[in-house]
Length: 273
Length: 266
Image: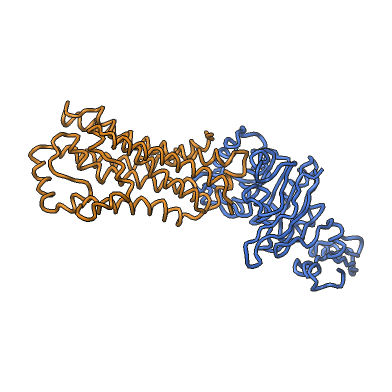
């Protein structure tokens, strides 16, 4: 069953800006990566899903409901991390989360506590004084605390340090196991590659390709096996380059840069197309 | 059509502004009312004779014979029009347009709460603020009159007068609120929400001076609030207040509809 279904979604801002004829589906229990450079139209597409924007043409549906007309109904089961986090600056993190829960009409549950612990967030700081990463953590807690069935995550790890990025990836894996449907936008191939089942690639407002991560990986990741003098040196090499060590051999992978991947889809590197 | 959690948060935000305005109003109302003294009246009237245009522009006239007439002349031409108007402008802008501009509207939108409910809640916050401010002013007026001039104030007449004033400020609040809903940037929201009432007040000042400019009174909504005629019980004054109230409600409703239908780039 398709939980998210976008068909021929278009919004033309003029001058080549906007999104054009975007169509894709996200199935139940799937993690879908929405990959593209800045300004490609990821956030514009997501704003349509959230019911902030009315489609000029085309349709967005979630759970078989229209994202513009039935937005309040849809929001009951959606958790959202906006691309640009902006909360009520006058509140502390704790006050904000209490507000967000009550505003939704729910009690402040144990899940909130658990998420705060997971991300080591002390919510007693005024949001105004929080760093980008701390605000991002508050955003994550607010999006997950009501245990939504659908997660719309717009560059959710921006501002997080690598340790917290890992915790976030773990959280996504757990949620996926619990059957959640997740749409994750990102401009980093590695992030999408680690978390998603399928990937939609968007550039200049057009969807270039929808592929499984395995296909993408095969196409755009190169694996090398390096043989070193001794197992000890091999271990050190594996540690430094993030490889897999076996004896004195190390397998390392390198992904092509996003630009190279895009070139592949846009004719610049037409040899595979 | 009201989200209680949001209403409480916003009323807390209103409180600070309300305290400031209440303090200013207390000061002005107390000072002006205690100046009511037949002997001092002569002094004030002499001001009017020296600079008739200036005094007339802010609604001050000579020959007020009763305490209430004196208050109408010296409070209801400028102070009680302009200060609550500034409150409306500031608060209305902060309730919708500011959140859209800063992006914090996302928090309110990414929840199973109808847009109509969000806008209506913010509207009730603004209306509550206006009612509280005018209610407080009425209280101060009664208290000051009672202590300084016991028995001289007809409270029911004062309530009638302030009900008319409330209609005027609900109308102004309607303009500010609609403007806040219409524009996604506070500079435009303020340009219209503050610009229109301020311009109308300037026109009212010109019209008050009289002469040829008197005809300008037909282009400003302030003309619909006629304190003297309200006190005199003239039907035209009641009609004016009713028009202000109805038009104000219509603009609040228009604001809610506008907000519910518009695209939000947040």
